[in-house]
Amino acid sequence: MAIKKDAAASGTVFPIGINDFKNIISNGMVYIDKTSYLEELLDPGTGVALMLRPRRFGKTLAMSMLSYFLEMNYQNPRDRSRQRKLFKNLAIYKNKAFCDKHMGRYPVISLSFKDVDGKTFQDAVEMIVSIFAEQAAKFEFLTKKKELDTVFLRRIKDCRHRKTRVFKRDGTFAEGMASLINLFIKDLANCLKKAFNKDPVIIIDEYDVPLQKATARDYYTDMLDVIRLILSSALKDNDTNIFKGFVTGCLRIAHQSIFSGINNFKANGIEDGFLSGFIGLTRDETENLLRQHGLGNRLPAVIERYDGYNFGGTDMLCPWSVLNFTSDALKSKNPAAFKPRNYWSNSSGNDIIDICMRHPDSSDLERIENLMHNGTETITLKTFTSYPEINGNTSFDTFATMMLHTGYFTVAKSAAADESEMSLNSNSAGDDPEIIRKAVIKIPNKEVLQSFREKAENIFSKDNPEWTKRAAELLEALFSGNAKNVQDIIDDMLMRFISNRDAMSGEGYYHGFMTSVLGIAAGTAGTARNRINRVEMESEKDAGNGFSDIILSKVFEGKAVILEFKKCKIGTPNAFKKMCREALKQIDDRQYECRYRASGYQDIKKYGIAFYGKQCLTMMPDAADA
Image (cartoon, helix red, strand yellow):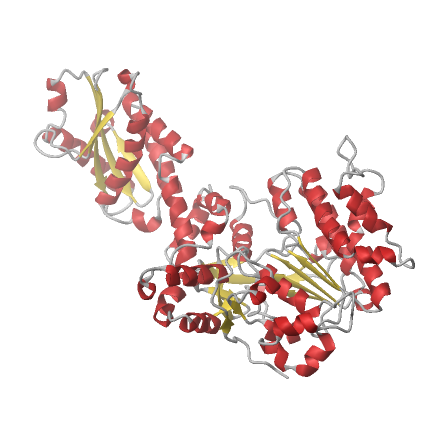
C-alpha cells in the first residue's frame, strides 16, 4: 500500500532542538509526518543505507522515528502497544500489512556520534566508550542469559566507571581495549540475534562527526581507524547477520576507506533520488505547516529565505529554520508580518566560510564573488578518501564539494563532463573505477547568503587582524614615501577583498574603499598616552580651492599625505599614467597643501592613484615628471 507523502503536520508546540520522536509525539509537539518513507527505507534490496544531509536537517529525529517504529519490547516481544500509541495517527499506520510485518519486530541498536568532540584522540574515544556503555546499560538484561557471552558488556561498563583503563599512561590502548571498542556493536548484535532469534537493526547517527573534529585537532588517522573498524565489523555481511543498517552523516568518505566490506550498500546523498524527501522539508510540507498555523501569507517570504536546496531533484528547505521561524512568528505581536530571520547559520560555527573568503587564489575568489551575486559555478565533484582538511590552500573543487555536502552550496543542476573527462579513473586502493562528475552549484538561499556577507563585513572591519595589519602597513608606506609599497599593498587588498562587480563601479567606490582602510589604520595609530604617533584623517574636506579625496596628518611630527583618486575608463598602462598625472595636477592646481604649509608642515607627500577593476597605479610627483 503506497502512502501519500507530504502528510500534514501535527501538534502545536514546536520541538526546537528536540530530536526524540517519542518525546515529540507523546507531548503533542509539531511533527512533520515522514513515516510514509518507511516502506522505501525497508526495501528488501538495501542492506545498509547511508543517508547524507547537511546539519540541522533532521537526521537524528528521522533515525529516532525509525528506531521507535522497529524496536521490539524486549520483555514481551509480542507486545506492540507502544508503537500503536506513537504511530496510530501517522501515515504508515494505514498500511496494516506493513505494520504487522515490521512494527515492533526487531532488536534495535541505535546510537549517535553527534556529540563526540574530544580535544584529543583519547578524549574522543572515551566519549565513544560512554555511548557504548549506555547501550550496555540498556541491554543489561542480556547478561542474565547464561547461554550468551556478555563479558564485553561488563567490560565496557567498567571502562565508563573507570574500573578499567581504556588507555595506558603513554596514550596507547590498554590490552584488549581496541578490539573491545571496535567489535562492541558487532558483539551486541550477535547477542541480540541469539536471544530473540531475529536479525537486529543497527542505526548509527552522525558517523562522521568524530572524523570532522579529529581533522581539526590533528588526530584524524587514529580516529579513522576506530570508526572504520566499528562500522565495517558491525555492518559487513549484513545479508546474514543483521536485518538492516542505517548510517547518517554529512560527508561520504570513499568506500575503500571506511565502508569496506559492506554488502548491499546504498547511498542517499545530496544527488541521489533515493529517499530524497525523507530528511528535510519539502515545499508541500512547508506550505502545509504554515497554512495550518495561519501563516499561509508568509510562504513567499519563507521560500525566498530558506528554500533552494536540491536533494536528488527534490526542492527542500531546512526544518531547523522553518520551525524556528514559525514558532517565533506565532509568539510575535503580529505573526502575519513577522520577518524571517537567520537561524541555520547561527546554529553552529561558520569557520568554513571564513576560510573560503580568505582564499589566496584570485580566480577562486572571483568564483566565490560570483556565487555571492546569485551566480552559478561549475565544479568537478570530489570523492574524499579522507575527511578533507579545509584551509586556504584547498582547491576550489574540493572546497566547493565540501560546502555542497554541508549545506553552504547546493546543486543548481547536473553538468555533463567534457568527453575527455569521462574517462575512468582507477584509484590506488583497487576500487571500481569512477567517472569524473560535475555539477553546477549556487548559494541556496538568502539565509546562507547572509552568512557569507556577514563574514565579508567582518573581513573589512578592525576586528579582522589581517585587514588591520595591511591597513597599518599601507599607512606606514604612505608616510615614508614608498610609492611601490603603497601600490603593492593596495593591489593585494583589491585582489583579495574587493568584488569584481564593485570594482567596476565608479570612482566613489574606490574612495569609500580607501577611506575604510585608512580610517581603520588611523584609528589604531597612537594612543591617548602616546599622542605623538596619532594620525588624523580628513576625507573630501575643503583644503584650498576644492575638496581633496583624503588627507592624512601627523600633527606632532609636521607630516601630511594628500591622496587624490581617479577611475580609468580602460585598463591600459597609458590610461593609468594619464589619470595619475591628472590627479597630481589637481592637487597642485587646487592648492590642497596650502593650509598645511601655512600651519608649519614641512613633510608633505602627494599621491595620485588611478584605479581600474582590481588594479591600481600609484604615482608621486617625481615619477609624474619623468
